[in-house]
Length: 119
Image (cartoon, rainbow, N blue to C red; front, top):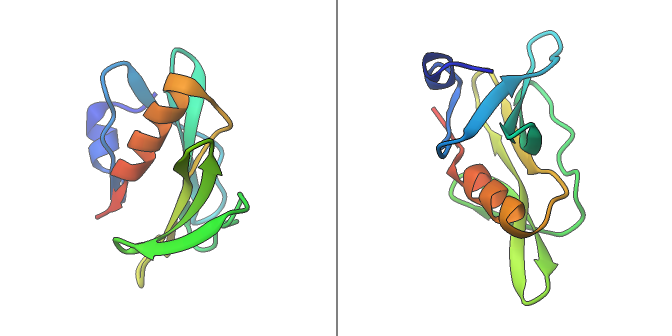
């Protein structure tokens, strides 16, 4: 689990509500991966490195707010399942995606993913 200072040092900003934590996973040379968790359940993943596997999900790709997002229909609403930021400096790509969840967990994961913004 990352401390508040470690989260603040990441190459992006993220709003983590109380009870959520960031956990660093296995990365690769020049790449890192983190998971956003609550009570041991992974809600979203974030990759920062030279080349992500975007897109993971099939859906409409929309470019807005400095990122490309994949939007999928879910009932009467549309969900942003993943976001890709591309930058001229390292890390060149920051890729955020939701895990397959539903209900309140899906809503929380989407809000947190929407809060990610490169520094």
